[in-house]
Image (cartoon, rainbow, N blue to C red):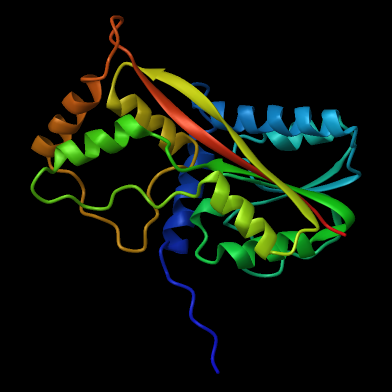
Length: 251
């Protein structure tokens, strides 16, 4: 009996182009990098709490390089990989004390397969730390996009994984033990265009296999107005990134 084919939700060529654009944008002094700063702080905090100092680490993602720098400060020999030079749905190789995946897992088509490859890339007793933007995020953006096309709504945001599903996926991938939790990261915006720019800076835009057509001028105007309808007294909209973090150990 043949295996059930993995649904093709995301386009990996678009994902690579998104990454190239983010790398180029990160060279600017004003590029947004708050998500990756948060990820790096979270890795440092968790390793400190567990009193772990990995000797070798593989970092998947991290266009701003913050996690790589943090791990290097802890004395780890760090190898970095990106969608340009690796495919998480294939064997990653190596035998690392730590594998960190940052804002990557949520845009692979075969999530269980990617997790298995991360586990296989660990040395015995090694740990995987995985973080991404999860379900419930960007509620104001989602509402604005729906308001932009009231008569013909297109899929402009990809499906997101929640904490419960993340825990089940870690178990399915065969980690000896795992922890799934998360935290909110709140950012205030004066307009929709700045939010979209921040998403582009951090490789967080749409990479669906069936991309929708661009918003027309009128639809884009409706989206901007709908976004600002949630502004506070200072004219700012608070957008929330719900961060899911998965931690798993290899026997």
